[in-house]
Length: 164
Image 1 (spheres, rainbow, N blue to C red):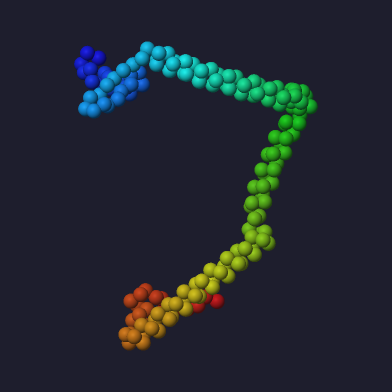
Image 2: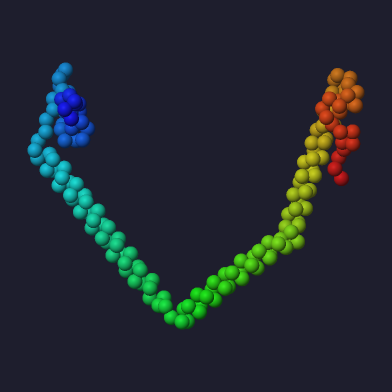
């Protein structure tokens, strides 16, 4: 603290809200009233008390909720048996779900969806084939290239054709 200048110390106090400052003309004026710290502590105390009251109400509400949820959940032999049965049924459900997933590809809805997807993909492939043939014919007319030269230049295979 000894190495800090008065200006730095004042700036630190202003930043902490313990001292007020104002610029009047070319001068900076600093002041602190003893009651300011008292009022700040009172405000903080009131804020903390309201937070405490709010937290206490939440705690009470949660405590009541816990008590309410415990009703009918007493540990009895019947409850233990039902819990065990529930766990067994959940395990069986998972096994059956896994078995259904194994046979999912045989599901008529899935097969129909695959057919529709294949149909759309086939139409798209044939549309692009149309586009390639159109560009090849344009290049033949425009530049007088042979079809085999176009195919070789663009890596088009010899057996390139529509998908049936």
